[in-house]
Length: 295
Image 1 (cartoon, rainbow, N blue to C red):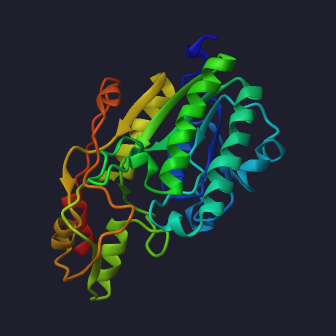
Image 2 (cartoon, rainbow, N blue to C red):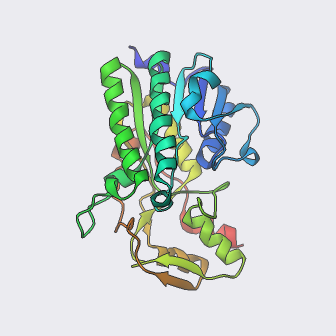
């Protein structure tokens, strides 16, 4: 297969699973602006019609039924449509496996029959360091385990069936359309605490660090990976790391410190070399973003 056939040049038909979600909607918006035919498949578990953007065709459905919902021939698949919370996954493993195992298996079969390029959105928890109790990051919860297994399945599918692929790894994406609440992420959750004058909850020890990456930088990287990336290992992360206590301080929040959770990990192993080699570098600053939100 000539991988150049699947570069994001000219006008292509591109499928984004999870296209009505936080990151997916920004990706769809950029692809549509570039003139591509863009199809979103989303089950609206965390996606929303409020995230719909012009120029995108939206279809509601589970990825298990992807072949029914998308009868077209597509050139590239961006597979973002999975369950994506580490800690909450402990409470609903069957739901995680429904989306991330059964759903993704159908996406890979669709990929095989389409013989196109797949860009899979993996999770940086796969590479998190072992905790003091010896638990590896990939084994922290049903979410992290399912995502790690899926990256291996994608790699094997590519080898078994001679398919084109690239695997990216997200690191704590933040920005417009970010969720708060049960399935939210910490930058927006803390903002809502700031907005409503409430304390924020921090799980111990509070010094664990994460790399926060703006959604526009994440989408920039995904477009480069879709065009030029081949194989595994494309981390997408800003290099600056913050603990939840530091993040709370940026908002000026009082903290309610809770015990450590079973899914806690001390830091994220940064692995962005392959993405940087494509000419990508993050442009946005978490501190500037928070200052603008507070203004």
